[in-house]
Length: 206
Image (cartoon, rainbow, N blue to C red; front, side, top):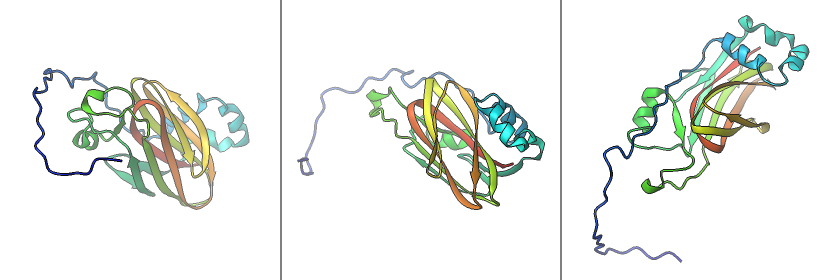
């Protein structure tokens, strides 16, 4: 049973000693959302299973006719993007605090380290991107993520269907294909391992 709170004078005998560079971390180039279909198409063709999928849906190769639907970033939402929910993101002052997150248009999810500052080293980061599909059909949801300090893994989900575990090291542009009914849908990203930045999610109608 937890101790009941009451006022008391607590005393510490030593002051904390923190080096001037204690919060210095390796620089990471700030990534920007990809808002053109061609590089997303190129990432799609480099993904396992793309050839078989394009045989089933030839329109996937016609990237010049993809219709932009929505974009989710920390600093802005466009198109049919409605809600961007971010759970258990990490605020490390001077590196990825809220001011930096908005200015750099990204959010950070830590994993290991930082225990001196009180980190519990959880891997519970969650992102929910809720958008409206204007019509039933095939869509490409492109997730852009950037690992920090080594490899990371996430699970991407559309509504209640999982695409599986996605490993990455550095910046990744990863399209996810799905058939959607007209109306609202949630694309979710769940932290599994490693630390990473959420850069953006863009949605395209094929």
